Amino acid sequence: MDFKIPPRVEGLRQDIGTFLEERAGDVERAVIKRGMANCLPELAELRGEVKARGWWCPQLPESHGGMGLSLSEFALVSEVIGRSLVGHYVFNCQAPDAGNMEILIEFGNERQQREFLAPVARGDARSCFSMTERDRPGSNPVWMETRAERDGDEFVINGQKWFTTAADGASFAIVMAITDPEAPPHRRASQIIVPCDTPGFRIVRNVPVVGHVGGDHDSHAEVAYEDCRVPVANLLGEQGAGFAIAQSRLGPGRIHHCMRWLGICARSFELLCRRAAERELAPGDPLGTRQIVQAWIAECRARIEAARWMVLHAAWKIEHEGAKAARVEVSMIKYFVADVLSEVIDRAIQVHGAAGLTDATPLASFYQGERAARIYDGPDEVHKMVVARQVLRQYGVDTRR
Ligand SMILES: Cc1cc2nc3c(=O)[nH]c(=O)nc-3n(C[C@H](O)[C@H](O)[C@H](O)COP(=O)(O)OP(=O)(O)OC[C@H]3O[C@@H](n4cnc5c(N)ncnc54)[C@H](O)[C@@H]3O)c2cc1C
Figure (cartoon, rainbow, N blue to C red):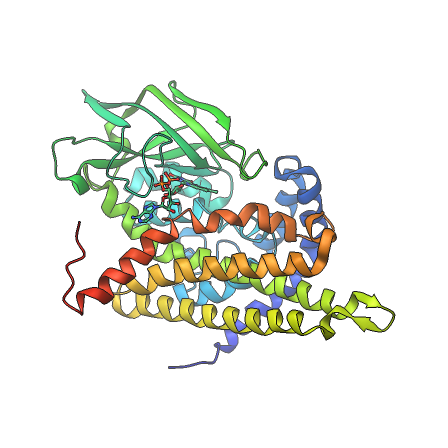
């Protein structure tokens, strides 16, 4: 096992870190104050700078306009990018576009790649992924209501989705819908590309998340599909392969999320330590002299470090043994890192006192935006179940229900 970051990747991390510190601070503050939808020109300018420096789409192969980093290399870069609230968007590796680009590369045909992938990879368009339904449990996605019925050479889609992240302003959605209701549960659904200007595709509203409605990429929409007709040619991969495709995007996707979260942890931890050093309870008596604050610092430091190695190991395992072999590692990092993230942000806010809840730092935005980490990409409890079942099987327990 090599614990050293390759010099090329370390150099990249330092350059990107410096760039974000020097160039992204103003835009980040503007986004916190005015919302992302009102800062698109500033964000576009930053995106242009990223492109000019050759850092565009670090996660994509060079043949699709990216940097061609391996999963482990991208994980290390993603950590640095994640320090900034606007980082992933500015490098065009933000969810859900990164996942959509990945599955379009793997499962999209030549026309689908030209019409849908290429504009997103260039940064000229955005996309969304529409799977979760309000009235059905997202943690059991085989129980789904949305239907896509075949009518000649078209699918007619009907259903109600919500939490379709970034649907506001997207040019297309990849929707998960039941196409084969009589098939075995995991063969019932397909993924279908739906241009957002298709009649019958309707954004009902952006759902407020922890009181924040947001807009543009920073939003989560309720979407109605009402007799929404798209060509059968918009089917992604095979009919009935919707879950298999969704599964394939989840392994690398969780590495992306976890390393972004660790970037947030690193930034929050630095803010925590600086505040502990600078905030005086009395003249010459900084907060950091209190043992409870020292304990928080020690615990956060160790947990961030542990989380980081777990994610890098999971990325290594995906690369060397495949996503299937790394299933348990990927589930472990999902809940472990989400928990570390919640704790570190919370401690950092606590050390800031009331100021931690204001817009003086990005902490309140991290808190508002990242509580969801324990819910999306599969709630933590589902991932704990995956891990526990695998462990208990070794003790002869039949955990199937
Ligand atoms: C900010 C955000 C962005 C999102 N973006 C998208 C997106 O772009 N596209 C999309 O399709 N979806 C998206 N989602 C939806 C997300 O994937 C679902 O919320 C998630 O899968 C959980 O589904 P649910 O909300 O229906 O909760 P439910 O399935 O109803 O579960 C509720 C709770 O029950 C508990 N639970 C569930 N299963 C078990 C179990 N087996 N054992 C014990 N406890 C259990 C968990 O605590 C869970 O939180 C997003 C969600 C959020 C919050």
